[in-house]
Length: 336
Image 1 (cartoon, rainbow, N blue to C red):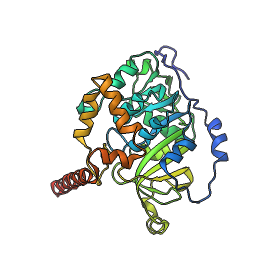
Image 2 (cartoon, rainbow, N blue to C red):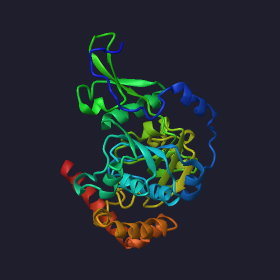
Image 3 (cartoon, rainbow, N blue to C red):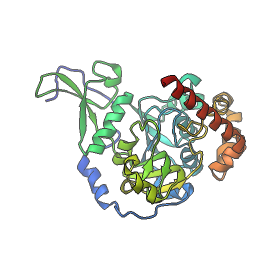
Image 4 (cartoon, helix red, strand yellow):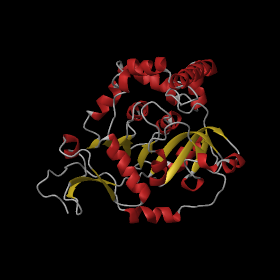
């Protein structure tokens, strides 16, 4: 039952949590194990539409599909919803393009210890974006509920906080224990983009390191675009199926995009380009300079490979790869 004495939330529910409505779409989705390989440009043109609710995989500046975020801006998508689930560099790119007009917020605007994004902050303070507040765990629980095919999950977080007050959750009394619980409504994105280490052409995906909520995100989303560091043969998938984190039948497009997380980091592949991320934050302080920066680094680049070339090319990538491998080696020795 709903706890009448508890403070109820007042935030807008930006997506319908009804699993039966989501299933209407999922029933029509092909389960055929077929080739889904295409360019990132074609995948965004085909599966990312104005007005859709978008979710991005990865977490913070780790394994974030930056190439896809830039392509979405390059193609001029507008009026989208967005799941701000510890969203950092991806958020400032999408904010710079004014891609979204409604956001479920957990962590946005900041690039963690690197500082705040002036352009993202200005856009969120403009009054043109509808917001609903959540915690990181709440958004993870919402995706988990959607992946399970249920309308909500009960949790014990956010209760008694202003974050809950400005969320769209509900407070209820547990019918078994009488304890107060927060209900986190299921979140079914229209489309998500997830960057992975390896995938075959059908969309069986491997992720090294922490998965965050990307396995649930893939199951919750109506359409899933995968960008991958490299393609592998299906024989490799079959030889060790336990490594498959996202199965093919959830995926709509597979795009081979080497270094697709750059300038954020890719665990065991390359470190984040801190110099370039700082450049992004610094140039935003001058609106004219930032406009030129976006033109040079996004709109004038035909693809992610061209962007990397303008940012130091393969030499810079090799420097970042060496740093990542060295840190991984040091961490391994420290555990011994």
